[in-house]
Amino acid sequence: MNPTAGRHLSVDDFNHYVHTAVPIEHPIPGAPRILLFTDPQRARIGLRGPAVPNETPPAGGLENLTVHAVHHDGQRMIEVAVTDPAIFTDAYPLLCAVADRVQLDGHPLTRALAETVRRFGHLLRREDSLPIEVEAGLFGELLLVAGLAHTTGTAAALEAWGTHPREEHDFGLPGFDVEVKTTTSERRTHWISSLTQLVPTGQRPLWLVSIQITRASTDGTTLRELVRHVGEFFAATGDPDPFDARLRSAGWHDTAHAQQRWHLRTRPVGFAVTAGFPRLTPDLLTAAGVDPTHVPDVKYRLDLTGRRQDVCPDDLAQVLAVVRQELP
Image 1: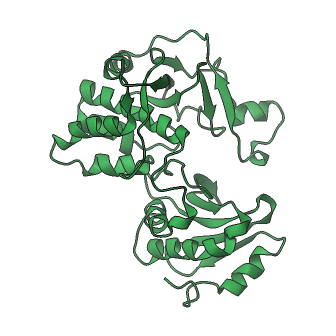
Image 2: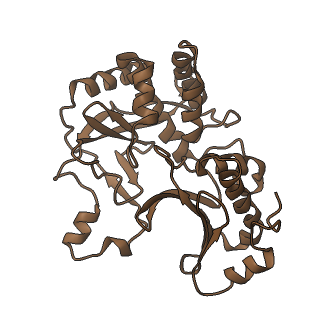
Image 3: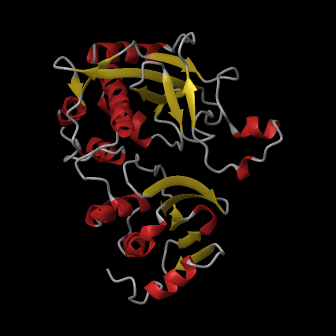
């Protein structure tokens, strides 16, 4: 795909935009509407395009790219941003290729990005490595998937993990949502990546499941082994493709180097995210006289060590009991 072939700015024009001090939003001709943007204040360039229903950003793992769901001009959108100014010129053809796969091939933006970065591998970390936070996070989510598959069946497990209409939360169970946080720390500490991650959706209660794992020698389980184990549940149904697709969107790829063995450090526990739960939210900032629109990116560490766990709903308690058996 040639970024100078009619649909896109020339590289010279693009570089002119980049080197101005004024943020630019340049619509790329075609449908759906895709915006090429420059953000001089935060040293970013990227694309924004409309999110399709249930489209969620993939997990991290890219060296110089970020992907977020954002609200822009009153619309939920997927934003892809390049964060290293040294490679803006090299990254521009990638952004053009992503836009072409959306507008010409009809792919959702996240799928277009995944296919493009597979071909433009120079923007990635080593293909066979997963950042430890991605590995641990996926490990915890798969433990919950395994628990749900045992207690509710594979169809309901996949529905809860993959297709529930949500923006922020990992699982949507009947009657409540679940955010899964997995840590390799000795303390029950978890990173929260936005102001809305611990905000319930509408009137649905929100639960945070805290999982602590630790490195093991020969008696633990690798992420690859867990992927294979959980995948067998869905292979037995005769249609493993939806699970495989959801797995890829969560950050897994078949060439991932995941040989570290893990076992549970403590029993997984659940916390009800209610008014007294420690967190940062847009409402709390507003109550403190701070306009949350001026704090677009927030990441903070939550320490739940010593906090009393809450009594989970029966179906969640059953899932956590299975998790303890899956990874003793």
